[in-house]
Amino acid sequence: MVETVETAPFEGQRPGTSGLRKKTPVFQQPHYVANFVQSIFDCLEGYEGATLVVGGDGRFFNREAIQTVVKIALANGFGRVLIGQGGILSTPATSNVIRQYGAFGGIILSASHNPGGPHGDFGIKYNVANGGPAPEKVTEAVFARTKEISSYRILKAPDFDLDALGTTRLGEQTIEIIDPVADYAALMRKLFDFERIRALFKSGFRLKFDAMSAVTGPYASRIFEDMLGAQAGSVLNATPLPDFGGRHPDPNLVHAKHLLDLAMSPDGPDLCAASDGDGDRNLVIGRGRFVTPSDSLAIIAANAHLAPGYASGVKGIARSMPTSRAADKVAEKIGVALYETPTGWKFFGNLLDAGMATICGEESAGAGSDHVREKDGLWAVLMWLNILAARGEGVDAVVTKHWAEHGRNYYARHDYEEVEAAGADELMQTLRDALPGLKGETFGALRIAGADDFAYHDPVDGSDSARQGIRVHFEDDGRIVYRLSGTGTAGATLRVYIERYEPDPARQQMTTQEALADLARLSQELAGIARFTGRKAPSVVT
Ligand code: G1P
Ligand code: ZN
Image (cartoon, rainbow, N blue to C red; front, side, top):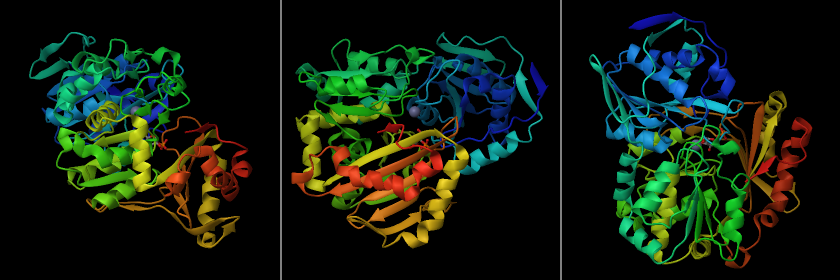
């Protein structure tokens, strides 16, 4: 039976870079999830009888939220709801299921790499029929709707069993609990040379993949250990836990430091890797060699043809604006277009749909391709395995040869987390106002070649996105970028991206800190970071 429930708007239900993200208790308020989900459906048309995919990263409150989403979807007339068993479905796997089953869209319950649990974060994201995140015009319409909503429709029914595989019928409607791994694993098998990777493991290659007690555990165990024959125990923390074992499921050098230490030890594994809460990010560290996500994107693009799914070459490469320009050198060399987009995966969707780009990536540990419409952590690890197997070389050799050929882009991101929002806004505005006078300014050996506020014109749908980050270019091809995070749940986070290009192989073995010291100092001075935020140093450097 469908019930109409009276409700009142909640403030601040505005989706950010990647869906609506708040502290878990905010989502636990009565009607909060229902309001947002009904607002999404209110902005869509033509889904009567259609399929909706629902899944999440297994974090605290995942199961409860899924029940609400499913009951609202059925009450609003969706014909079929596909749910990952146990409420588990990684973000890239959701994207694949949406595409493979011709679904109308999907709802992903996740706050990605943010910590989970009763005091952690929660999130809801809507993906459209191409499998990618809803474009800005949809998310803006949803936000507008959340401000007006006065009622939602919900099925009055006992909770559904999320654990037993199979189909439940409710009159004309069906709910199907599907294996979250099977379709995704089949897709990976099509893209990569599993025979060759299996031979690599057979020859003694050692992998440590940390699933961080989040969604990728079941995927990684099945693919790496069962299908590819990696040593038992190659996958760490393989069981998804509601609080991620109390850890922060962010595969960076802070939260996955143990992997870095392992990879840097003399007898470390050949490859250490990890993924985040919902499985779309990746971390790749070879023995003795950390690979920055920006370098990883460039190296993947340069070597993708070694994987069967990309044997005919890449059509174009896309990267988010703050991502280093290492990929640009590859695009130039292989003679394909390079697209520079605003931060957030949603901007890649059109380029992928139009066949203009094959490989995409972001500095924030995201890489992927046209196989789905999300970034994909396990895909990136499999791509690296395929490249290493095909080249018969280790990570360090692949990386240093890449630099020798294309030059090295030293790169770091400095985050000033949870600063006061007003100060952060003022900092950005002051920089923006100073833009016209920056060109030609000299700081020691550094001279500014130009500066602007990045704006993107989508070549496919013609839409424009302004104020996407401030770029300061230097004459020696260095760059500093400033932008505010769109995914934070408390205060503001200022992100500063620092980059320097080094073509000379003799100077490519400095530490990043050494290579970027001058630019890093200048990044603070130029924007008055201490003055506006009270911070003398970044909270996280990645
Ligand atoms: C961050 C990353 C961005 C990524 C997003 C979602 O967004 O910087 O590249 O797409 O998370 O994973 P931000 O907090 O910077 O807005
Ligand atoms: Zn994520």
